[in-house]
Length: 486
Image 1 (spheres, rainbow, N blue to C red):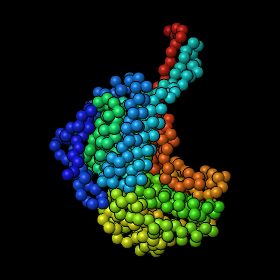
Image 2 (tube, rainbow, N blue to C red):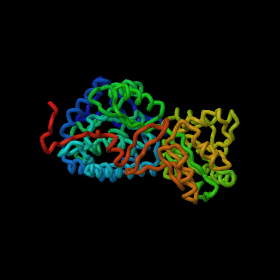
Image 3 (cartoon, rainbow, N blue to C red):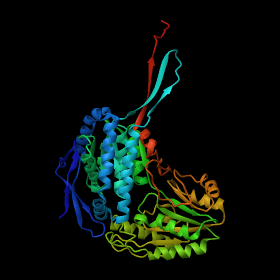
Image 4 (cartoon, rainbow, N blue to C red):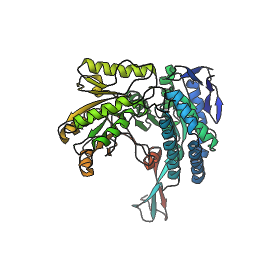
């Protein structure tokens, strides 16, 4: 029997005004896992009404009370690993290790946001006028529109709301159609149990056909004062355009075409392990996944042989099987898209070292390509699946040029046993994040997370997240009466 869930508005579970619903499918079995309310523009207005009404009291709540709610949410979430594993397997094909990682990191995101609530949030300024005191204070913006994606649903569902709530804002979340429970309603359930007041967080679920209308209605509402979105670059451009049209700040964390560089002083066996994780964790459906593996020609033969063998050994299939490493993609259509990228590359001269072929439903095997020409779509397009391209380079100059040969700029890994060498290369690669002697997939709640170029702008994480969802206000206090010319 499928799960049935309503919208979450004003602290209550309510049906869509139209009475419509949408189906949430298990990507591995194709069966309906849940039925959720399908919101329309009227529901957007109801959610913003609730968030706007709740804002004054939430913004005025004592910081220690706000912090206590976020800390309790972290503790509650940490105890729900089995529930998250079930949700993520059935909604997005996530394996159990990936689900438990989601729980651990998301809980710490709540804790980091809680710590930021009572951290210093202003400055005393030098004043031009005699006897005046100047202050720069951080204040909440109001209602924040948040868009939560499906691929790391609990991590990114929490990230969409934690910093805005910590800063004193209220939030309306539009949950992904592919994981509306895990990335939206589950997060709301945890916060509701933690004592979050009614209306402070509201969650909209919708039919896929209505996504554009819901997003536009939400951003256009004049009471919404900021936007955050995590997702593809294509959709992010549209969200950014809507936000800009209404003069609203936005944090956009978008797609990546991330490289992992294996320099000539790398430990080959370590590099193979690191790259395998970077490429195939969550079936490559992570914005930080390594799409392009750039290997120094001195190590290329050994690395490629060992990497292809390891990729070939990875079990794919049922996410509930504890031996599965590469689970299903989010939908059979996603697996077909990845297979088409591989087929296009092969038709243009690429060689398949392992994997390839037609997918089985939503399952695509771990795939490694080499010799991919520039006119192949996968050379520039984000794969977002269990496939990568291996390419060799002769020296650092060529490696840097290859790593920068993309419109995206999210993250990069540089495998080297020489940190000075790695840092020298890292300083010349145009990404928002770089990891030296590590691969490309990493996230920590206290760190500034975000990209450059077509990977978006703004930063989540730590004090940067609080700054993104608050406004700096100049306040002066005259300690003596001023003199005026007339």
